[in-house]
Image (tube, rainbow, N blue to C red; front, side, top):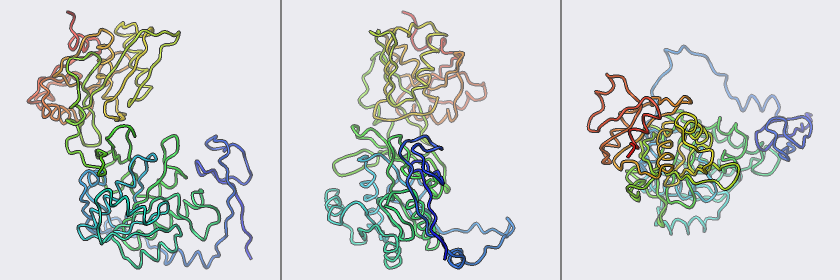
Length: 456
């Protein structure tokens, strides 16, 4: 008879160790090592689990025929998925507590059920009465939406076989448990085992399974990172809890493009789709205010115009502060250094605050030029032109570098009503594709400042 094996697993990174450590040797976190006792599977059980051996076939004989995607009524959700739900796919949705994950998924489930699609919503955290109360508050009451309050994976599998849904929602992954693994729900071994079983169930029955996952304080999905490798699609619902806008961002997609984004607005009736986010983000803009710049950024394949505000103020301390909100701290430090070294702004004696309006988080370097001009506008206390859209990356030498998809960015700015755009200098052939908007070009940050903030 085989003996049970004992090991220690880090609940943060999934690193296994034969001995106990107070600090994980892989990720360095304190107090995350948890004892995990494994029940070994016999050779017969392994053969039964693996089934018949696979046979290798030539690439030219692989069939490209696949089941049609299941249409998703929420267009912003469908955009991020790549055009709908793929049968047999495993989807992971993460986000901070209270950001609206359960609300969005319940709305998605009800919308599919309203079109005749059978959906099974499984909750491991809330009772059926709590789900019913939320559905009533959101105005959702669909007969084809099946509810189940359960955490045991075997019972869940039996219900999936009985109901035969097209979509299964599990809220949340950290509450699921399998009888084949010892330990409490949420531990590394339980999360890994349940995810593997759900993956096999999804592929075998061609049912789409959407998992809701909690996130850590660092913003990553809780549990082992292997969970993100098992699933087919990883989505993040992000935004400032004190703002009404939410971004659904795709960071992994085996069936479509990554980095796509859907925009939602949180209302009393739930999450509402935003079809024209650029106009929404600019509607409260104050014209002719110093420190305000309009940046053209890309979220996946969608161009967005966002307002970037900067404020400089003489520091009262020895070390001036750099406070970003919605932009990367390192990019703010880089832009501040370039403005000081290459342009001559005395920012070493100024506190700098940068904020992206609407609670958005912008990661791409195409925001550099708008950030630099907003800081300079606040420093000189002179407003930038109200009809000027700005896009461009700033190098360490103060040069401006071109960004991708410039034509799509400027077309979006033209639709919103901007007459001029400031961008890095383009080759002559590329200028012909820019129509309907006056293009102002600059080679360096200093030249861009002379164009946008001419001396009076």
